[in-house]
Image (tube, rainbow, N blue to C red; front, side, top):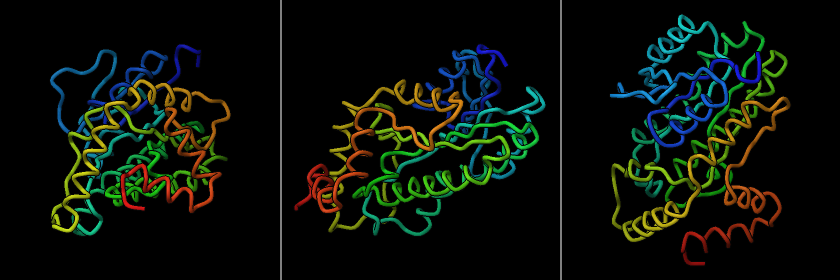
Length: 271
């Protein structure tokens, strides 16, 4: 394919935020882009074909992939971006709420990947970009369950890449830092809040709102996704933004005790 005809891309969670900006960036880069959203959109982004897809439903996922194959005949790039957040103490969420979070953030990625892999194997070509987070690298007080989903995606993606590399398929991770989107406005709250955590949880939410205001633009993340999608010899991980690069460096090279102290200081927790 020529430089201006990259192939067919599928971006989940493309109705807003990072997903929307990424879909548009890939379209400008020469991809024929299909995006997904849980509900029908009034107006699709220019140049992007939007499909209704619930990543927690096997049938919905397969229908979306089948529709792309009928229309475009192939899938060259899958960007697993759909996800939800959860802010609260780990003890404050029931197992039911935790399962719902993992069903979107982890098993949603698994469903989409399992539906796309047979297509890519037949093509002997494909790239899967899984959206992780710096919270897939470090502890995250009052984001323990969300961070757990991103840690899971890290292990899943790196392992899967080794399994499919000889089939012409690569799996890579993009790790954004804090990004200026409406993500924090749509974040889930714990379904069984507990009084002992009220003050610290409120402080954690206040901190999140503060750092989001100075976070990276979603275009920063989208540019990294395009880079990861097109790299001839892709890296396993791509950090997006200065904060993400700093966190990755600190986690990799600093002693654990210093990382622990730094995290508590950043999260305004007692030493």
